[in-house]
Amino acid sequence: MGRRKKGDDVSGWVVLDKPDDMTSTHAVAAIRRLFNAQKAGHAGTLDPLASGILPIALGEATKTVPWLMEARKTYIFTIKWGVSTDTQDREGKSIAESPVRPTAEAIRAALPAFIGEIQQIPPQFSAVKVDGERAYDLARAGETVELEPRQVTVYEAELVETESDLATFRFRSGKGFYIRALVRDLAAKLGAEGHVWRLRRTAVGPFTEAESVTLDDLQLLGQKGAASERLKPVETALDDIPALAINGEDAFKLRQGRPIVLLPHVMESLKPQFRDRTIAGQDASRAVVALFQGKAVALGDVRAGRFEPSRVFNIAD
Image 1 (cartoon, rainbow, N blue to C red):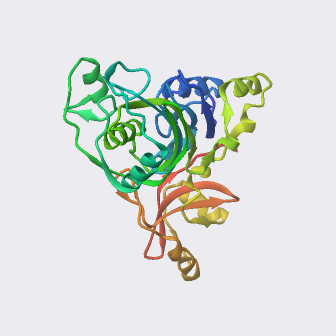
Image 2: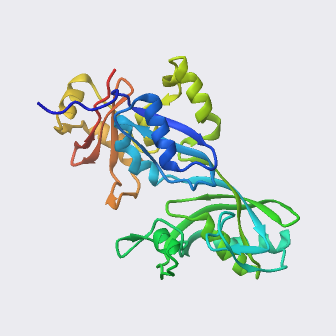
Image 3: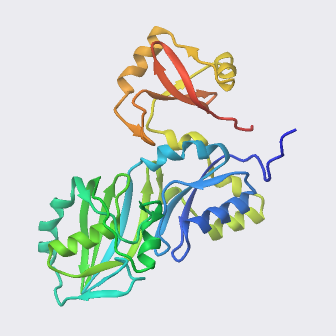
C-alpha cells in the first residue's frame, strides 16, 4: 500500500496580499499550514521587501503554476535617487552616490527605451543559476559574476509622481523582468544613482488586489472555519486559454488519461482561439482546458480532431 499523504485534499488558489519583510517561501508555508494542504507552491517570487499579490497554489492547482508564471504582472514601485546599493534596493549596502535628481520631464523622456521587448541583465542578487549556483549566493560571498542579458517584455511604463528625491512608477511586464535591474539601468541612462525604495505587485494574470486577502484576515477566517471562502478554483489561472465543455462520459475518459474525439463544429469553434505561446519551454499554442460542470478536468492539446490530455486534475468535490 502507498503511503498516505499528510494533510487535507484541498485544491485551489489563494490570492495572498503578502506583507513586506516576509519571504515568498515563508508565505507559502503559512498558507499551507492554515489550510493543512498536502501540496502548495507559488507563481512567482516576491522579494522580502516587496508587498502585494503572491498567488499561492494548493493541491491540484500546483499543476497550473507554469501557466501563471507566464502571466503579465503589474508593479507600483518607488525609486530613491542619490544612492545606488549592491542589491539595487534599500536593504543593500551603498556603492555609489550622486547629487543628481532627475526631473519628471527627463524621466518621461527616458522611459520609452524600456518599453517593448528589451534586453535586460539580471541583478547580481538574483536567483539566476551560474555553474549550478544561485547568483545571490555568489554575490553574498563577495563574487561578481557575468550574467547574460535576457529578452524581457514591458507592456506599460508610467511615471506616477515625483517628490523630492523619490519617483514612483507603474510598470506592466512579462515573465523574467526584474524591477531592480530596471532601476539600475534607468538610473544609469539618467546619469543618476538610485535604488528601489518601495515595491508592490498589484496584479498577476487574472489575480488583482481587489480579490486578494491578507494573511491576518485569512487566519481570522481560518479560526471560524471559513478560510475556504477565499479559495479560488483551480481553473482560475487558466482564464486566457480556450475552454472545452465536456460531458460525463468524456470526463471519465480524460481522468483515465485517455484522449477524446471532438466533433468538427467544436474544432472550428476552438481554432480561432489558438495563439502562439510557450509554457515552461514547451509549445502550448493549441492548449485547451476541459471543463465538466464548470470544473477543470484536464489540460491538453487539440490536434487532428482529438483532445489529448497532458495534465489531469483530481479535484475532490
